[in-house]
Length: 241
Image 1: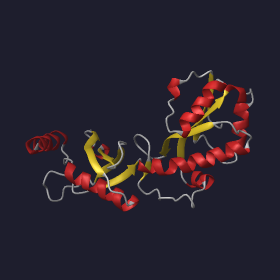
Image 2: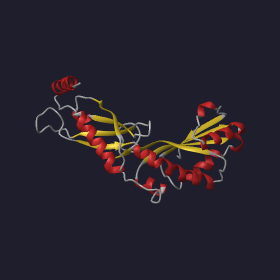
Image 3: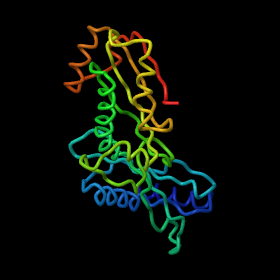
């Protein structure tokens, strides 16, 4: 393994005229960043350069981490310092620029506030989920920049968060067909435009038979919902513009 790493280092240095990534050091930075920010211990699954280019400023390193009690992969993206002052062939340091663990923290809080607005608009019989949360400035995938603060449930206010940070996400709404009408899109748009002034949220509405919706409701409550198991009778997607 050592010979492979050194061989790769030599190739990258010679062909691209830039230092190579020290994977061990990048892993340490990723683990320390997650510990310092979230006070949670992770294990490294893998760590690699996501892309390589003749332009050194395009180097992005992806560390995949797991919690000991979860099968979910979490990603920390890092960038190197682009310096090699000790001339050992490797970047001198690395900095975490984003992670997607914050998505798991933010998702239930965003969902709760989005659901409350929907209920106030007169929607009572629905299930929902929030997916693909991304803060503007993320170069790849979904997640949050490293300087995004850890926000507790007591501190969370969706309207304030959306005003201060440019977040994008999908809000899926599942309803029985009997609850649908030709004004449903307009009702939803009018309910949320006071919160969001731009197209930060993409709405997806899925409609099912009343019988299937009862089953969906049961599955959601048991964390066992797979939309592909049910026939979608109608659907629509839109932003707030």
